[in-house]
Image (spheres, rainbow, N blue to C red):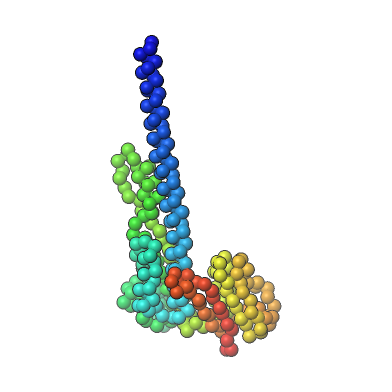
Length: 243
């Protein structure tokens, strides 16, 4: 009887030790996964801002220079290993669009109003938490497959050369950036000087001729203020010009 109790007591101690080890492993696994996931979403937000800012700059300037492309790659590379792809949908004289993927064709070439530029940044490696989840679910089943989950950031926009845009583009800009931290300031010929930010959406019922009225057929000049380091847009200013 004494031997049986002694053996049983040792078995209980071993079980407790194993449970404690598994608990520690689980806690470490959870902390690492959670931290990796938070880092992933924060990096995704930063890369999204960089890509979106670059597209906004290109569509306003009407040209994608080699220097801007190199700077874009350098800024994104600070947050991981990425492949950067650019696509141009150019409109010919018949109104048909053709797609171009070669940087030799797209860069340093004046773009026309109506052309579309797209920038895609894709991470070369999956995030740590995705790798951990994949390995956890495949453990003991012999799959050994790698996850295809990768960070992607894509933005596209229509070209409006020389910084001049229509009233319709002004409203589209306000709508696109209505939930961002910066404001879109619009100054009109009627004396309007309003900053749209923090969910403040343009009112389509604004009376014609009022200070904040946006003429859909009017001509406006759009100026973008990007951060010189991160390329994140700090603000957009739009001024109505005389037609």
